[in-house]
Image (cartoon, rainbow, N blue to C red; front, side):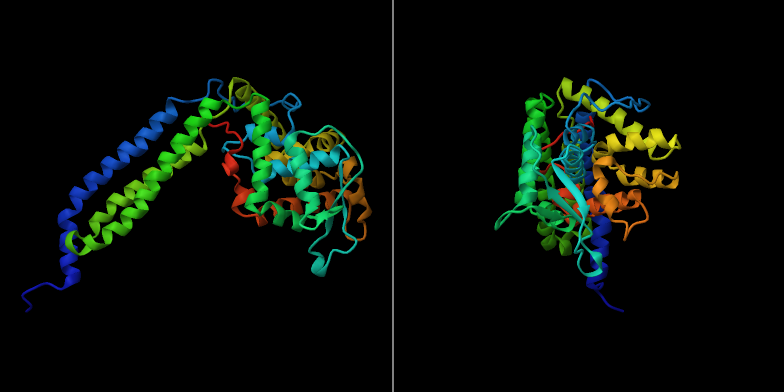
Length: 358
């Protein structure tokens, strides 16, 4: 009965009319962008590929815990588990002590304290920075800090960057990073960011054309966004390790798989407990500490690491030393989760870290 279709129907007609053209252009963008990034990735695979079947009970050449976690990770950047591993290694060496909090607060929300000791030892730069971050507040030095306060410390982007920069500097000083590959990674990431920004700007630019050509025009900026996201991911996982770094990464992943196996399979309780005592900082850096501790508890192991002996004093609130150790590890993991994107994700923060991906 009406001579002219309603506006919504006109828009549908235009969308169907222009859809083949915009789909073709969008497909071209996707094939060019995503295909280019994938081709780049294939042509820049590691010279020393990882062996997924390799297992070793030996830590990689006594590499500091945080650095072993960084080179063994699949994402570029230093993340909170690496910092937690470094903190536990400081406890193992006696520079800090983890103990029950005599005043845990309402609902026992702060059950553990980290206390700095008088022990002195040679420290890597990132370890010294970590101690400074934890035991220096706005009002000056402090002797103790709770895990909930640790979450706020690493949740500050500015403070967290100090740790990632120091860890990256130590990786470079150890010859584990390749400067040219770092530059290439930066360029690839920037290209991905430009495509994402162009896609977002394109969505806004398309609004005036929706009535004229229909919704099909949105295919173009969405294609740019998709290609940009792939580009950012390609840069984030690009292998920036030197030949020595790749060798260390291979050893770190082999050790990581060994620790992961210990967290799943039964073994003599005495041997398992001894391994747990020595390797817990590395297990924390590799993200398997809590699972390993719970597995040992199920096997009947009640004693946690000797160097966490202060936790055994928490008998009023724990059934065993291992229970207190699990609670402490969970509190440590939660501290990183509270920090959001800065420490929990950490990928690429402050331009620091390394990837084992190709």
